Image (cartoon, rainbow, N blue to C red; front, side, top):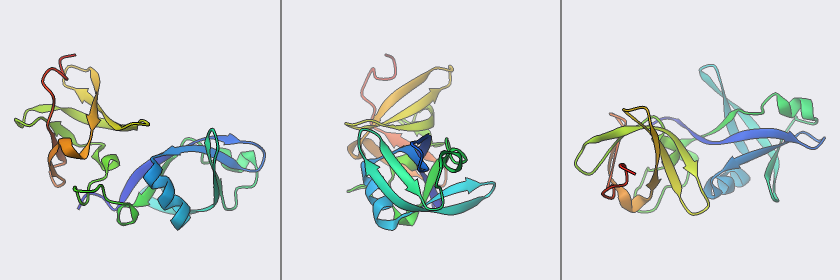
Length: 171
């Protein structure tokens, strides 16, 4: 099993005077948050639940957390990573159990099982997800993630194998 909780987004700066926070996450995850109305923040080794009062989708996505009624309350959580139980997340079609956000920390290999590097972040762009991969030479590259490119995943060894286009890593 991968992990019980998965990183789903990040809380930004407080917005306005009522305790709202800017935040970012994938669209599918936003729908889960709207439905379940709960997310978790990691405090030490524990995941603490926080309840969503409402979410506003304007130019920025804003979240109002129950009990946060002013900018000072909101600031106490600013910059924290949001988590959800993996069981609450929608699966990527055709790859059951795969959520791109869980690939953070995995070793990435190409179709010939050659190590590319370590996934240090998963970046959500409007058109696609990108894996930010640290190469052994210290450089960092972005590699597109798409379910059709996944050759295999070994959650126990924390390895993801992708079909990598020739020359992509050499750019």
